[in-house]
Amino acid sequence: MNDYRILVVDDEEDLCEILKFNLEMEGYTVDTAYSAEEALKLDITQYNLLLLDVMMGEISGFKMARMLKANKDTAEIPIIFITAKDTENDTITGFNLGADDYISKPFSLREVIMRVKAVLRRTAGVQIKEEEQLQYKGLVINIPQKKVTIDGEETSLTKKEFEILLLLLQNQGRVFSREDILAKVWNDEVYVLDRTIDVNITRLRKKIGSYGKYIVTRLGYGYCFECE
Image (cartoon, rainbow, N blue to C red; front, side, top):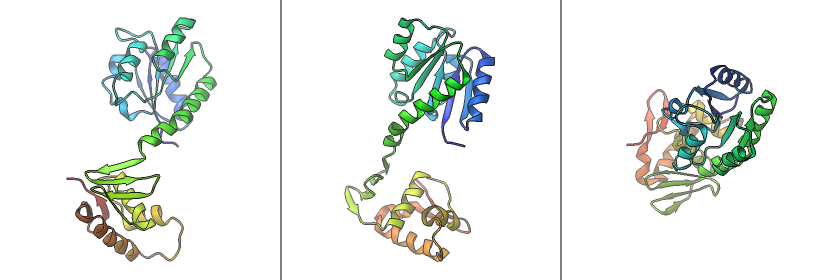
């Protein structure tokens, strides 16, 4: 399984179900909507890719794409048009709207799957780039540079302290047991005691100053980063 979520928007319900079935067989999480109106009621930001039909109801696929590209929260989500509108002008219109690919009906399911994989490969770098920095108030983690700043001042963390903080901040509100943290941060290293986690958490809290209080102990369960 992978972590990609795909939304298929087409007024042909049978086609939606066929695409959903085949994409799920490839490990994707797939939702369907039978109109642009229905799709726009969803949280579009949760999807890594949209497959849009063009000819649908009052809001066409072209119009929906134009709306999404105009919204900064959804502008970077890749779009593949799947449509019977296959003239050169239609294709040019689709790409001018920011589409990442344009597939004409009827199509081969194998072709659709390969094009989906290709678009996700191309756009994965963009999605990763958006996550290069994590921030909570004045606490900033620069992931590529492995650097943490507190209210603009860099603080020196060990590799394990950095990885624990990154794990907790990436999953705000989620409680990680000592075993969870050992598995994710220490991986297959041997002879690591549960007490090691407590020591690293204690040092980490001190190093991040006033933000240390947000690393909360859940007695009997573990640790989490709890926002106000």
